[in-house]
Image 1 (cartoon, rainbow over the protein chains, first blue to last red):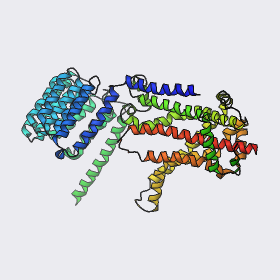
Image 2: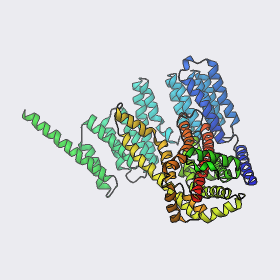
Image 3: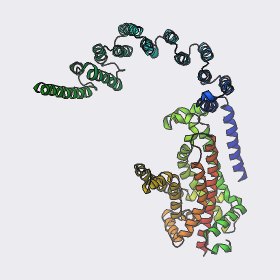
Image 4: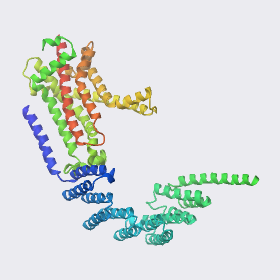
Length: 302
Length: 287
C-alpha cells in the first residue's frame, strides 16, 4: 500500500520537476513573464501623465531584461517592441525609434519582425504629426519588402497621408501616380490575385478622387476580369459589389451601369456561384428604377 | 460494527465513518490512489503548453481544444473545463474500480478480517463491468440533468426585467448552475446509494443490486440523503470559493491550486460518504 502511494507521489513530483526543468526559459515561460509585465504596463497606461518616469523606466528595463532572458524564444523581438512602446507612451519618440531601429537591424531577414518594427516607427511619426517622415517610412517599407501586401498599398497610403494632412494637391498627384503604378502591376501580373488587388485599389483611388464613374468602371473590371481567379471569393465579391452599389446609389445615381456590369458578368460566367446574388441585385435595382420612373411621371403630372 | 449504529442518524454514521477511516487508513488507500492519478492527469494537462509536451500534443490540442489552451494565462482559465472533460472517462473507468475497492475493504473490516488490498482488487475485478455500467449511467443522468438546467438558463437569459420577481428568478437561475450540478449529483447518489455496496457485499449483479438498493433505501430516504448531503457541503464550499475566484486572471495559478485542492476534498467526501453508506448497508443486512 505504502509502496504504491510512494511510487505515485515520486512519479508526480519527479514529473513536475522534470517537465519544469525541460521547459524552463521556453516560449511558455516567456509568455508567463511577458503577461506579468504587460499587466503592469497596462496599469501605468491608464493614466500615463500621473506616473513618475521611474515607474516607466522600471517597466522598460523589465521588457529589455525579458528580451535578454528569453532571447532564444520567438517572443524576444516583441518584448523589445513593447519596450519601445514604453518610450512612445512617454512621448520619448527618438529613444523609441532608436530601440525600434536596433530591432530592424538585429532581425535582418525576418520580414514579420522588421515590418512590425517599421510600423511602430511609422506610428511614432504619426504621433509627432511628421508627414514627411511618415511618407519616407512608408517608402522605406516598400523598398525593403516590395512584394508584400502592405507594400503594394503604399502608393495609396502615401496619397491618403497627404490628404490627412490637408495637402489636397499633393494627395491628388499621389493618387494619380498610384493609379499609373497599379495599372503597371496589372500588366505585370495579368489574371492573378495581385492584379485583382491592384484593380480594386484603383477603384478605391478613383473614389478618393471623387471620380465616381471611373471608380465604378474600375470596380466593375475587378469583378469581370477576375471572375475565375481564386482570390475573388464571395466575401471579396460582396465588397466589390457593395462599393459599386453604394457609389451608384449615392454618388452617380445611375443604376444602369451596375446592372450592365452584373448582366455582363452573368452572361460571361454561366453557373457562376455569384450569379444568384447578382441576379437578386439586378431585380432590386429594377424595382428601384421603376419606382423612380413612377415618381418622375407623378411629378410631371403635378 | 459499533453499537451506536443502531441509532439511525446521519450524523452518527458520518462520525463513525470518520472514526473507521482514521482508525483504518487502509480504507483511504483506493480513494487516495484515485486522487493521485487525477493529480497526475492534471499535471500532464498543466504541462501540455510547454516544451517538450507541446511538441507532441500541441497540434492535436490546438485542433481539438483550441489554440488558446496552449497559451498563458488562457490555458489556466480553460484548464478546469478541460480537466472536467478528461475526468469523464476517469470517473467511469477508474472511480468505479477504486470505489468498489473501498467498499470491499470496509466489508472486510466489518467481518473482522484483516483488510487485504489483494482481496479488494479481486472484488473490484469481479464487479467491475457492473460498476462501470452503473457509473456510466450515473454520469449520463447527471449530464442530462445539467442539459435540462441549461434549457432553464437559456429561458432565464431571455428575461429582460432589471428588477422585481423575474429579475430575482433570472439571477438565481443564472448564478445557481454550479450548485445545481452538485445538487443533482447528490440526488442521484441518494437514489442509487446502495447499488455498489450490494454489488460488493452481496455479489449481486446489476438488476439484483438495483432491487436491493431500493429495498434498503425504502424507509431510509431522508437518512441516506443526510449521509450524502452533509459531506457534499464541503464540495459546495469549494464551489463557493471557485465562483468567487477573480475572473480577471489576477492570479491564474490559483485555479490550478484550487483544482488540486478540489481533488482531495472530493476524495474526502467520497470516502466518508461510501464508508457511511456501506456501514448502513451492513447494519441493515445484519439486522
